[in-house]
Image 1 (cartoon, rainbow, N blue to C red):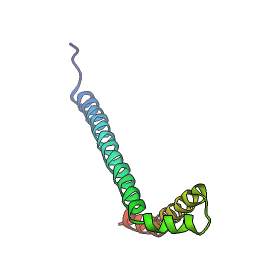
Image 2 (cartoon, one colour):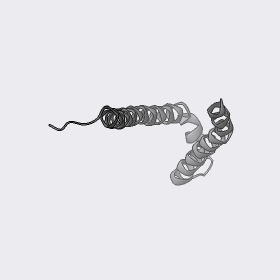
Image 3 (tube, rainbow, N blue to C red):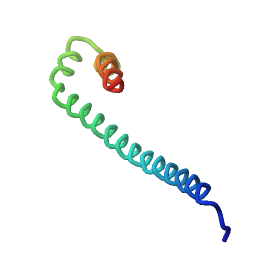
Image 4 (tube, one colour):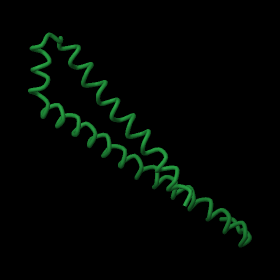
Length: 97
């Protein structure tokens, strides 16, 4: 056991608390990320199930299975990019406050 001045002890204690807080926040961020990914997959599965008839119609009109899958992926990416594009400025604006 070593004896240290109050200022040294307080500085070290604050550093330790800061590191612990960062680790907790990282763990929470990880859990939230997993939940978000599961929600996104769930939304994609529900959307695909609801559009089953539309996909069947596309296949009947001559599209291949691969083309239908590509169409669905491109539509999903377009929606994600549009959401990111419209949500980005809102996020920046909320961070300024």
